[in-house]
Image (cartoon, rainbow over all chains, first blue to last red; front, side):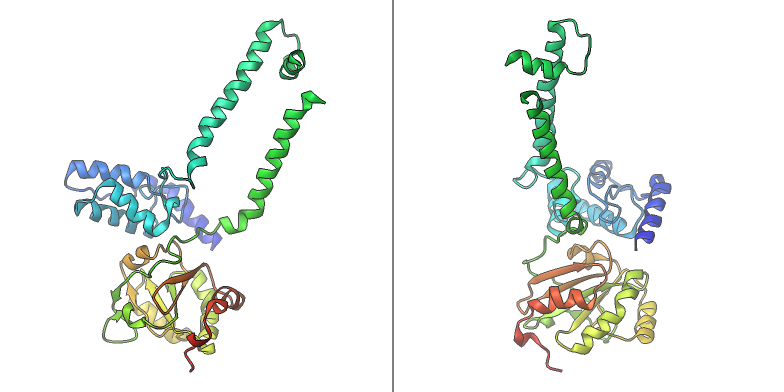
Length: 145
Length: 178
C-alpha cells in the first residue's frame, strides 16, 4: 500500500500541470471552480489540492464541485458538502471554530511572542556596545533583576 | 538560576508537545470519519448479485458491515480471506460496495477467491463512496439496525480488528443466526 501510494504520489508530481483539462463554459463559474478545487485537499495525496492531483478520487471530487456549482450552489455550500463527508481536514482553509482556533491563532501568537523577544534583544543590544552577541538576552534578564 | 528558567521552561514545554505528538502519531495517521453516529447515506445501485438494484433501505432493522473494495486495490486482496472468515462466522451480513471498478473484473474476482458479500452494489462513478467519505479502499463501516454508522475501519481488516472494533459493538441479537 505504501509503495503504491509512493508511486501515485510521484505520478502526482509528474502530471501536476496536465491534471484537469475540463473547463466550465461559464468563465465566472470556471474561476470559482478553479479557486475551490485549489482549497480542497486530495485525501489520498494529503498535501496536494484536488486541482493538482490526478488520482481518481480527486477527479471524482472535482466532478462533484463542478456539478454543485452548475446546480447553483454557493462556494460555502460546496465547502459544507465536502466537510459533511470528509471533515474539516479536507479544507485547506478550515472555518474558525473551537477545534481549529489554535490553527488560526497560533501564528499570530508566535509572531507577537517572537516580536517581544526580538524587541528585547535589540533594545539590550542598543543599550550598550555588544562585544559578545550570544548572551545578550540573558544579560538583559540579569540587568533587570 | 534565574537566567536559565525561561529557556528550560520553554524546552520542557517543547518536550511535552513533541512527546504527545509522537504518542498520538499512530491514531492521527488515520483520518477520523465525521459520519460516526450519523445516518448512513441512502443509495440505490445495480447489484452484481441480483438482477434488481440494491436499495440500502432493505437493510433497515439489521446490523450489517459495509466493505468498500475494488479489484484494483492491493490491500483488498490482502483482506479478502478475513472477509470470508467473518462471513463464515455468520453474525452480520456483509455488503460489498464495489468502488470504481469493472463489473466483469469484480465477478471474476469473487468467483476465483470466494464471495463474502450478501450484496455487491456497483458504485461505478464513485458517487456513493464520496457520500460515505471514503478516501482509500479498503474501508469497512459497521451500521446498526437503525441505519446509523457505528464504526469505520480504514485499511485491511484482520480478525483481531474485527473482534476488537466490530464484534464487540454488536448487540447479542444482531446475529444473523445462520
